[in-house]
Amino acid sequence: MSARVIFPRPNPGVAADDGDELRFCSTCAFSQACLSEGMDKSALMDLHVLVEHVGPLHPGEHVFREGDPFSAIAAVRAGTVKTYQIDRNGHEQVLGFHLPGEVIGLNAIHDDRYPCNAVALDTVMLCRFSFPKIALLATRLPNLQRHLFRLMSHDIGVASLFARDNTADERMAAFLIGLSRRLAARGFSPRRFQLTMSRTDIANYLRQAPETVSRVLRRFEQDGLLHIKQRDVEIVDLPRLEALALAVLRE
Image (cartoon, rainbow, N blue to C red):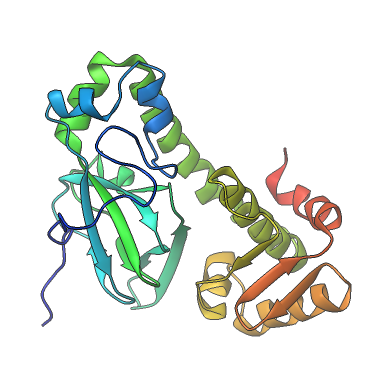
């Protein structure tokens, strides 16, 4: 039986790509909430809320596993993390894909144990936040507390998106537009990106068959919506793809 991995030991030699001891990384999930309170990194350190850099995690390595005791949440700093559960029949159910700047582990707060598994899809770097410490800080900083509530609310909303009765085309369009917007919010290209997850994982997440996903992507390319080369995707016609996604995203 393989050993469980619960937030691997932080690597002190790894520094933020574009931050330092005083400045937050541009992908920091909490920077805006803290800065709006006048709190920079030095102030956070004074309160003993230390952000620990974790990684690199390699593809297939777990951040945490279902049932592990809850102690921390983590923000993805680089790479992609997949969350999933195994049902009673031993089948995997993909819950989500987490990109740089997004938080994993919030759904463990209620039961004090992680209710799902989190695994690296590529080379992943994390920022680890001790939850007791960040919760204590949130009682002093109303904006940080509101930000935590927003993150939890967003997770609930995303989880319900693909539970609706939408067509395969609408689901795929919503998935791609969702990725595009999430990447754009962190300063990455909204039109050109890589699908770090497999077609099988995408199909599982969208509650479709893998052949359906492949067929829809081919049709999108033939219709001039996308250009696809292996895992690299370019959105050619963003307005048309957004219009197709609207049935799921319901802005």
